[in-house]
Length: 53
Image (cartoon, rainbow, N blue to C red; front, side, top):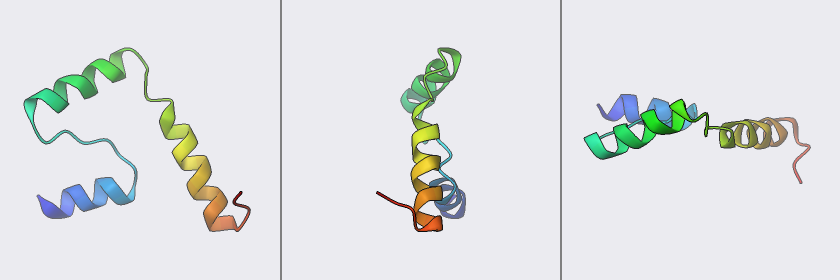
């Protein structure tokens, strides 16, 4: 389980570790509220390319 959590963290993949967070995650997906991921990926790409900031 630890390897899965680490992989999700490194790849910025949301993961639920209990029933309550799973329910919130599913509802966020249904409402298309995961737009923050675009911001995270843009920031990570900028850091990799050295164009941060």
